[in-house]
Structures are given as C-alpha cells and as structure tokens.
Length: 130
Image (tube, rainbow, N blue to C red; front, side, top):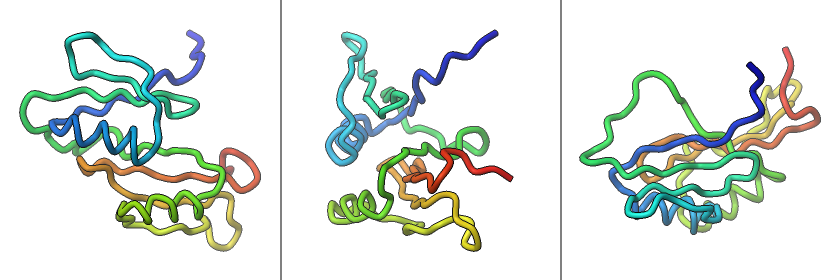
C-alpha cells in the first residue's frame, strides 16, 4: 500500500451553521463542494480538506482518537492577531517550542464545538526531529 497523502479530516457537529461560518468566514477556508440534500461540505485547508458533517443530536465528546487539527501558517503571530481581533479565544497563546531550541511556533484555540485547532509555523524544517 502506498499512501498518496491526506484527503480530509471530518468533523461531526450538531452546530452545522455555526461551524460552517467559523471555518468558512472566520478561518477563511473556501467551499469546495458537498453532497446535495445533506449538510456535508468540504472546505479547503491548503494541503488537506476539512469535511463538516451535520450530526443528528448532540455530538458526544471523544475521549480517544483525534486530538486536534493543525493548520500550517506562514506567521503564527500574525494569524493569532487576526483571529484574536475577530474574538477567537486562545487557550495557548503563541509560543516557540521547545523554548531552549525552537523548531516550531504554535498557538491553540477551539472551534465552536470545542475541537482544538493549532496554528503551526515551522521554524526551519517542516517537521521537528528528536
């Protein structure tokens, strides 16, 4: 088996309109398409796609599995400032990691359903090494 890449990450939500507004208007992801007659859409996140799926009834919080969606940005501080100005609350403000020899600049916020989203800016190599 050869993996060609990531096609999408799917988020199930009982707050479809709010989540669509957040990912489309606040984060600026362009609409790519969807399935006629359903509230299932695909949004452009650069190197992957975010799929929003309307759930029937409240979505149960996950206790295992996906932890967060990381969005690679050119400048974490600029993206933070833009989102913060729009009222997006951050629970981890921009910081360089690890502090003693930074390889990434990051910040974390949550979407309207409480899913964690990371702003990720590589410093040097795209992926940190151990």
